[in-house]
Every structure is written in C-alpha cells, then in structure tokens.
Image (tube, rainbow, N blue to C red):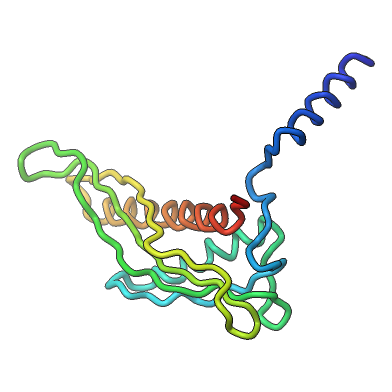
Length: 167
C-alpha cells in the first residue's frame, strides 16, 4: 500500500516538474479569468449556424469554469463565422457522393472591459465528415446538421486551447 502511494506521489512530482499541464489548465491572455461570449456574426448562407457555434463556445468556457454573464466578465469573445463549405470526399460513382466534408472558418477577438484587444485568431477552421444517403435527401441533411454540431464543438475546443496556450 505504501509503495502505491509513493509511486503516485513520484508520478505527480515528475508531471509537475516537467511542465506538463492537462488541457484547459493554462491561463487566459491578459490576466482574464472570465469571458462573456457575444453571439457570433454569421457571414455565411447557413441559416442559424451562429447559434450552434456560439453555444459550443459558451459550453466549452462553462466546462472550464471561465464563462460569465456580460456584466461580470473580465473580457468579451466576439467574432464571425467567415465561411462554411462542403466538399465530396468519397464517391460511389462519377457523379454520386458517398461521403462529404463540411468545413467552417471563424475569426475571433478577445477584448477587455475597455474594448482593448487582448487576443485574436484569424482563419480558425475545422471540418467534419458526414455520410450521403442516396435514397434520402432528408437523411443526408440530418447527417450534415449533426456534422455541423460536431464541427462547432471541435472549433470551440480548438479556440479554448489556443487562448490558454502558455507558450
């Protein structure tokens, strides 16, 4: 029993000593502790996509205990969904898609209470694949919506990771 405790303690010291950090334990730029997420602007033809991406950012900040109401937040995260595109990645024939990929690109800024720029990221992009159902356009559309939801979560995780990078 004593050996197990000593092993855990030694492993903890080694992890701390080598500078390893668990994801999300970094600090936000500009001594920011809490962030308010403003509704993203939608510069695409995808109706309502700004809701999914804004919600994913709020969820990620909440999961990491960094989200706050506007009046209590140290900083504000704002930006835009600059583009959404879809491309075929697998075919069943020369004109029939079997799988497609949807890609989104965002531009974001983190500003302090006075409006001064603390951090920005341009052309943050991610993608997600979805299956095409040759017999059901409705099912293909549902698959695409699910891929966009997954994509919003990936982008939110990526943005949080970028904001908390300490190097």
